[in-house]
Image (cartoon, rainbow, N blue to C red; front, side, top):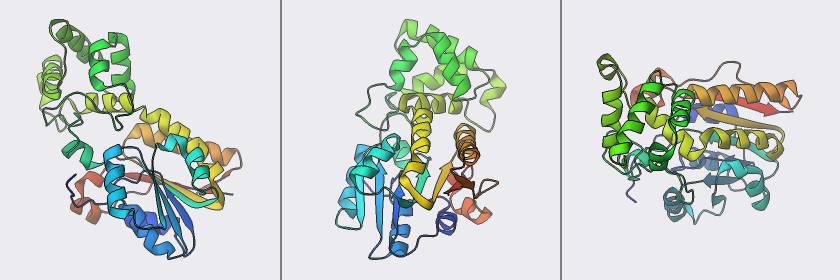
Amino acid sequence: MSEKIHKSVLLQEVMHYLEPKPGQKFIDATFGAGGHSLAILEAVGINGKVFGIEWNEELYEAAHGRFGGIKRLVLVNDNYRNLKRVAEEKGFIDADAILMDLGFSSWHIEQSGRGFSFQKDEPLDMRYSEKESLTAAEIVNQWPPQMLEKILKEYGEERFAEKISEAVVEARKEKPIVDTFKLVEVIKEAVPGWYSKGRLNPATKTFQALRIAVNRELENLKEGLSQAPEVLRSGGRLAVISFHSLEDRMVKNAFRDFEKNGIGRVITKKPVRPSKEEISLNPKSRSAKMRVFQKT
């Protein structure tokens, strides 16, 4: 697996709000390339520890290869939907802080070969983990039109969900849609011409919807959020970085419910956004929003 320079989103803001101190133990629930974890590891010092959770097998193996010799860093190949169980197994209950960065790694687009990008001709897979069985190809070729339309509306917020789902069903009657370029072609033929000339590629929202459905992203997030307070110590903080409105709404509502139920308080009344400087250096950070909660 070739290495590329990875830019951790909102790194300074994460450090500011989570305030890592010597001797503390942190959980990075979405380890990825490890940028956030390494900065935290330095701050918590020789008596501190970081627990990194990474769902994708290749990214986990790469992280293990690079950082496996660091005893203060514990890595596991799992999903944060199992946050409480893996934290108990590795001795990280009563953590000082938990970080969830919900953005998917650029590795998935650039190197995975699993069809995450509509700009590359690859098989329609879109699984973060090969241990999962459902693929984008199965959804596109086997799901009934009503279910296709539902996920395009709910997960992609696609205004032409009905037209696209109808076009997909017609196209697959002739031949299964097994690669990204064929799906893009079907989408472009289904939507009005002016839609194809807009700021976003007309396939953007469909690909987002398929990725979310394949990986059960919102279900996993709901599970992970619900378990986080049980894993934090009193006074511990949970920071979540989201990248689209569906995730941000779920995080906002979960934090509000925590507050209502007396579990703690929301630290960020408005989401923390990247600075203009960060956006200029890393345009992919533009849509990032971070919310922070503190357990009582």
